[in-house]
Amino acid sequence: MALPQLSQDMTSEDLDRMVDNATRASNFLKAISHEGRLMILCHLVSGEKSVTELEELLSARQAAVSQQLSRLRLEGLVTPRREGKAIYYRLTDDRPRRMLEVVYELFCSDDKS
Image (cartoon, rainbow, N blue to C red; front, side, top):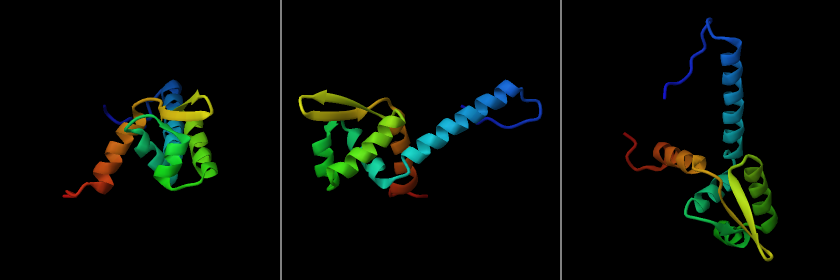
């Protein structure tokens, strides 16, 4: 997919669409810019987890985990499911997984050449 380019012959509809896409992308990047939220997404890539499981995996308090999950839910990145008293979260779609693959490639792979 080619990146959009601003040009003087763009219609106002094209420009509005570009601004809307930039806003959505900016909100997505803000949502994943916190290391706690990023780690939650990393754990959810392998499948659904309860809030309690995420607390243990992150060595974090329930309030902190719930706050980060709330932001991820607000951005549509995770989806909750209640089972009795437990709440489970999963990725809503493939965007976080694809983003994590890019982050890993840019910052974590051993071959940085």
